Length: 392
Image 1: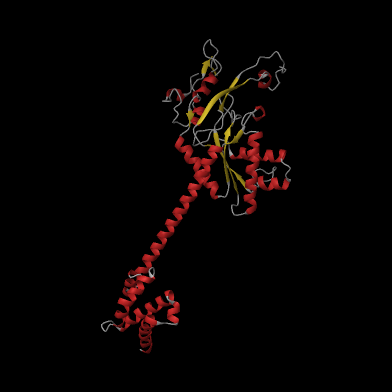
Image 2 (image 1 turned 30 degrees about the horizontal axis):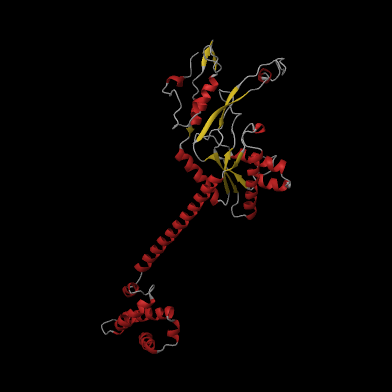
């Protein structure tokens, strides 16, 4: 019997905090001892040191995860849920928190790792489960409301509710620590009572180490309406978030909640940071939308200018569309004289007169209808050209 192949194929002797902790912890356990063709994680030499504890401690005492990737993932989650009109709340663990304890692992007790971040997380299905359990057992809510929010309990996966529950993710690098449980009837439990060993007081307690998240770690919990535009879905999402908060405070999340594990409280400091980030996101979106609209207007303006005649283009430069007072001066000192100039072709004169008439109707409508004083002279000159062009 030999040790696993990867033991001698460039596998480091200790965990590098830059690596994926979940991959290391689940796949590369290299503290096995082989005695008489039997692999064991129970002892080393004569000091009876627990090798399971050694392997667990290979990932404790340091912060795990890539801080930038964790931040990026949590921010993208917040932004997506915000756009879905959902709810995002950070909660801080009050004591040890363990997730995925029932998964297979050489140290007997498993752990739930986020596949890409390599950090502990709580799957969305678990978040939904603890929220539903709280609603069903501790809320005086009608069953139809619970069924509407979560979906039918007896048809899991076939009919979804109108609320989406997302994975709970850490907001920073995470501190892990080793814990221990001490069942008094290990021999009885190990054989399911089939070897004749009763759960008696003379059996020796057997310490079993396992990995947990240390206290004081903050996770983002997110809930969104399945149909963001439906008012009933948005209201149900808010109700579900309230139930989730109560469940985290009073029941806890993850494994061993009956003994106090997995209790969370709202993290006021992180909540301020979340709200600021969402406000910044909305502000940036508004700035981007304004910029995009300005760019579209600029494109439309360039296209409009490109289609204009030389006379109209020159008028635009003189303030035709955006400077009424300035263009009035140019109309008086430049365009009326050009319209009446002998060297100007009848077609150009007519075009100038039409543009000047449109400008008057848009910017000096009352004066065009009932001209007085200097405007009366100007308008008569414009109308004369228009009348002559109609006769021709």
